[in-house]
Image 1 (cartoon, rainbow, N blue to C red):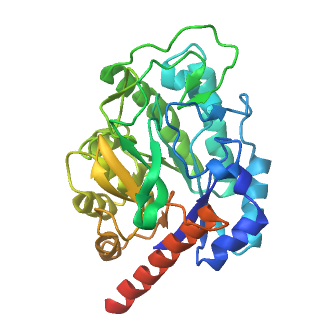
Image 2: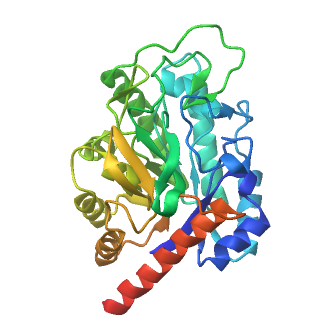
Length: 356
């Protein structure tokens, strides 16, 4: 198993790469979408407000951009393992079954080919219209550390998604007034089938794995739109759409634990045995939807050490990252929270190896 960390676009700097290496990480998962305007917001919940306006405006990630990013990461002794999340402007009409979906799917194919050429192994995605929505902030973790959660009594009112927005971001500020409207489960799975049928063959040729993240919050419907994988049993349905090594999972343990069915240990065991995991988010929570809170990696409902033992037993050789974590009370709360999580992961992995 490999220790990694995820960085948002404005954090993809040599200084942060050195921070990652100093914490024992060897791999990076990069977000190239401009979710937020400030680093202070990186670990906070989105609530009912939009995260921001996408800056890409249909600009595809070029081979040169990806090559240079990987070279900068390599220069600090790390590897670039994955890109996480397409920009909404890259695939809004694929998600919404809009008139430009054929053009956009060709753009995604170009991105996957560019990633393969640049030697980046995994593309993480979340096939979701509403995206991550409704989280609230609070002193939810040990010692009143600030974190996020989905608490139904505190969550904002679910309003329809406005035109020009998807995945909680504005991709078209000039869209006409109105709303996206209701999307059924059948419609969403049909759109996913189109996406995977077109993209998986290209991913196979490029040597890139597509890794699907489950819904967070794992509700069956959010803002009038159906959700895809909100119970562990739906992973099988997703993987069966286009069976391939290159169609895999971005397994988020915290999200699985939030679900009302299944078992996080059985899920980790099943899909690591089957080699269906692109990479893993190690995030701990207390509670289940519609009332859960994110906490430190060592204090939630998940026995993370047990999960690591399962992964080790199954010879899982992929990357583990703390996708986000509670913030520590200090001058650098995000970095301190990540350093704590990475140190715990490093120590646990060392102990498991010694005990075998």
